[in-house]
Figure 1 (cartoon, rainbow, N blue to C red):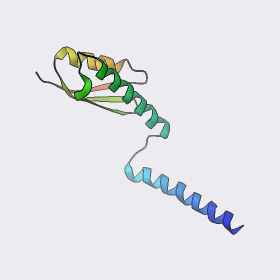
Figure 2: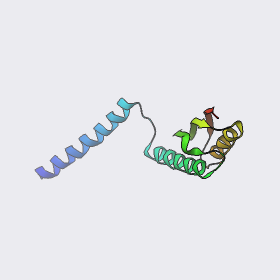
Figure 3: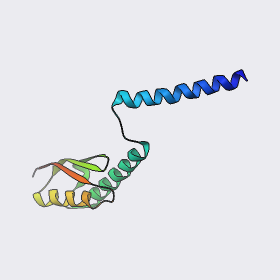
Length: 104
């Protein structure tokens, strides 16, 4: 019986600490939102890399709650527009923030 209570309190403490960690980090996304954002990020990055005009290896993709931020370097204004279009067409994307720089 004592073992049961010890395990119960240990589990309760771990759950409480998990909540405190989220508060300290300022992270308010749920696990589901984090998974969705990771899936969106991976899909966008894969499509950017596959596109020969965009050359997505030099583009960083950050996603938070469906808001996508693209930063890095692209070779032309056309590539910038295409990168934004690729990101916007991915399911789950709400907004695309463009922080791309054009370099020759």
